[in-house]
Length: 81
Image (cartoon, rainbow, N blue to C red; front, top):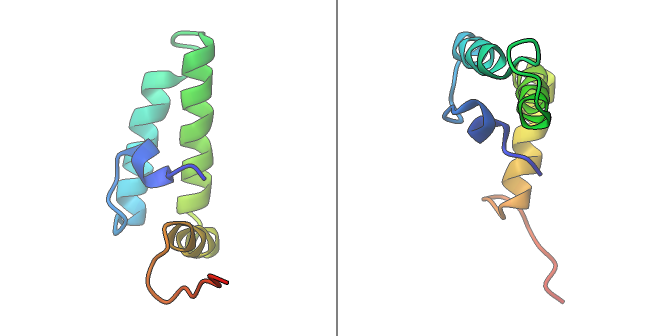
């Protein structure tokens, strides 16, 4: 699973305003109209995907739960048998 917080360079507690600012910076830097390379397109799409998920409260909550579970966070029980 991609870490959208890392992609946008944000802490987990980032506000919606900070998420929007970080997305705009990444989008501006990697927009295909600026430099049309496969790497720039990939980074632009990752930033858009991260923004779309983190800017929506419901999607962000689901993403955070999945990310926490993937990392073996607190409150997650695992069957080790």
